[in-house]
Image (tube, rainbow, N blue to C red):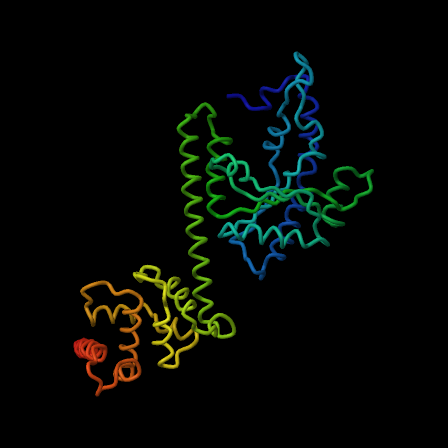
Length: 368
């Protein structure tokens, strides 16, 4: 398949070639503009609330520039001559300088975009588009990225480029460029898709099955991104339980115990009701009334040891497992604080706890 340039009407070639030669001449100066905005953005994003995986930049190659400005549109009138899509590329193209900010999670894209847009003394945002909106609203899968069109303000490197472009014009330091913000998964997908779909060595090497595979992988990556986003959200929640200046100091109400339990142990939630009052009473009996204390008690290693020691015939629900964890931690003190008095008749809870404590003690002897 011929390239845009090769298919171009001879009547349009002269105009395109003139722009290509001009671009080739000024490209070295434009590469310095790319370097300038790249370093500015890297510095800007360093040490912020979201640190991207990496920030890269590129200046469009001469070959890519020629191919893009050789695109044509439908004639203005039926039967009329073809017209160039970009007859004045230096005014209409915003991607000769391109920056890519690669993040870890989808939510970070918006944070990065807002950080950049707030730097009004450096950049003026003239466009902001979510490139995946169309596929979401149509119920399909595909390219996903946040695209900002930014304009530099009184930039000295841009002024030097403008002097090289037209020595007779007064430079103003304003230049439009594109900044793409996307996750590492979307970046990998788009790079592979672009190489195969648009940069293939032989454009004839194509089959509709490729489209199906690209759609399928886009769907899978969206699922993976959602899973990582959920994992990160859960991590931040769990981490907050250990912050004594924040969530860690929160008081243990029945509902709070339920929420912390379901975050830390979502696989152990075989309660027949939603009453966590007894769990709160058990914790309060030992003076445990803060979230950080519950998080410490629900240690994965401790739970594993308790399961081995008691060898439950049935997987315990939250109430029983919490009771066993407190028994493991406090021994006879837990029995005296939460069971019937020793002289009470009958005392089924005391008997049950004593039996379980003996199992724990026998298990501990085997671990010596």
